[in-house]
Amino acid sequence: MDRKENLEFWIRNRRSTFLNGLQPGGRIDRSVIEKLLDLAVWAPTHGLAQTWQFKVFSGSGLEKLYLKQQQIYKISTPPERFNQEKHDRIATKSECVSYVIAVLCKRDPRKRFPRQEDLVAAACAMQNMYLALQSFGIAGYLSTGDVCYDPAMRNYLQLDEEDACIGFLTLGIAREGYIPPERKRLPASEKTEWMID
Ligand SMILES: Cc1cc2nc3c(=O)[nH]c(=O)nc-3n(C[C@H](O)[C@H](O)[C@H](O)COP(=O)(O)O)c2cc1C
Image (tube, helix red, strand yellow):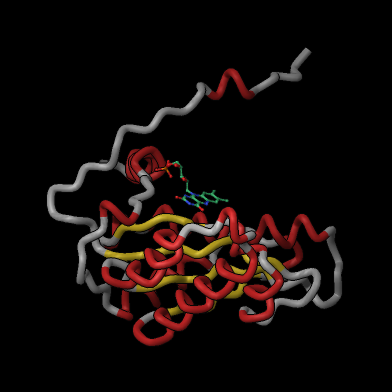
């Protein structure tokens, strides 16, 4: 495979692997996470603002994160919508999740560009990692949900007013033989208008 085909391959075959595709007890080496983070920072960034930031959770750090998510779910959900099973399931995630990388956007202190640009750069950093997962022999998905935007979670992640949590990149090892379901996309032509005449 030449270099161009290689890039196409990884873009076309990038897949989210959700919890049901992750192997219970599957553990990722810290060195792999470090390599992922090294790739993340090669994202494009206007004025080299480099507005991404990462918080990496594993072991007891991950258990504390899930405990926090449970507390937030409990406090922020009206009693009639509260689902005990959903609440309890949060804590069991760490059986098959080895690392969570919270991908954050820290607003450029000089505010040189619209906030949107700081967010886009951080999202690009997230995508660099998403694209690399399979080639590193690991699997996972980006998780957001209401908790991602909750003031208590923002506070826990030490986000200031104009910062943001892009999402929680939730990582483990794919179950042996696991084949992610086929995904579809609308053709690019349906999303494209050529302004050429
Ligand atoms: C901004 C963003 C937020 C997402 N949040 C969630 C989420 O909270 N839970 C989830 O299961 N998947 C989440 N995903 C992953 C999508 O479900 C996934 O990308 C989609 O199903 C397409 O599958 P693919 O990534 O394998 O192409 C999120 C993706 C993006 C880009």
